Length: 95
Image (cartoon, rainbow, N blue to C red; front, side, top):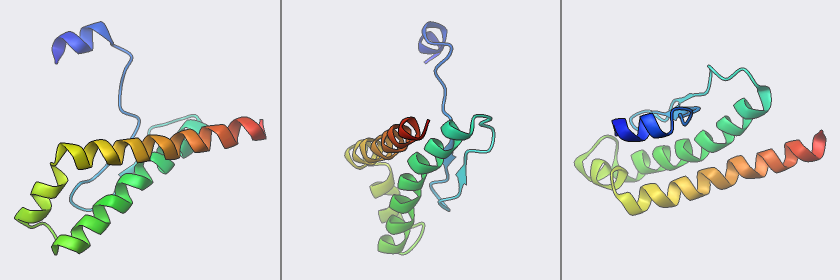
């Protein structure tokens, strides 16, 4: 991992979503367009997490297995990036 950080020092995470509560954090983003795109992206994760918690009855072992499943994670990232991209496209139309 440290080699990747050295090779790509400017790559970072804009926001986060708690895997245990669904709470979103996009608060440290100064640019309002990037911040809103972050909320759109993280909102997809939030919806997925809250649905998983509902489906599996909270923080159960079944939830943990579902949450850490790489296929589920990858599918959720594709959906989340799509939401952010849709917002960026709308923002470009507004400018």
